[in-house]
Image (tube, rainbow, N blue to C red; front, side):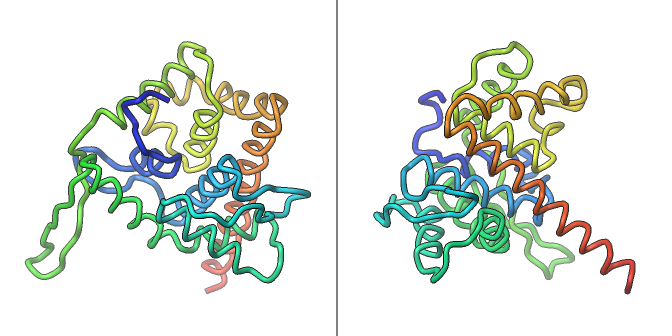
Length: 231
C-alpha cells in the first residue's frame, strides 16, 4: 500500500476500518472482530516468515521478535505451546484475547498520532473511552485503495486481498464501501477472495484463513444461540 500508511500492520489497518472516525467507537462486533484480528495476526506472522501453515497446523519457523507488541505477543504464545495446534484453534485462542489485542493496537495508533483518546462521563459516574481520528490520511488511503479494487477493478496486492477478506468476515463491508456499493458488489467481493487462492501459496493462505475464520464464527454463533435458547 501507499507510503501514507507507514509502520502499519494488517491488524492496525483493520482496527482503523472498524472505528467510527467521528464517534471513536467500534462498529464491529467484539466477538467477531477478535477472530478477525487473530486471522490478521496469523497472516502477518506467515508473511514475515515466523510461522508456516502445513496441513492446517501452525508451525513455528523463526522465534525472532518483530518489534511489534501484538505480533511478538502472539508469536510467543504460539512458541510456548507444547503441541502444534490447528489454524482454527489458534484463531479461537488468540481471538479470545480481543480486548488486550485491541488495546495494544489503539496504544500504537495513538503514539503514531493517528488516533486520540478521549474520556466521556456517563451519568457523571462511569467513564467511557473514545478513539476519534486525529490524522485521517492513513485510514483514508486504505479505504480509497479497497474501494478502487472493488469498484474499478484495480489490481490488488496480497495484503489488500487479505484486508478485503477480513473486512468481509467482520461484516464491515457496508462500513468500508458504503451500503449501496457493498450490496451491489457482494458477489464480486466473494469472488475476489475465492479466485485469489490459485495465485500462489500466500493466496492459498488467505483463502484458508478466511474460510477458517468463517467456520469458527459459525460454530460459536450456533453454540451461543443454542445456549441462549436453552436458558
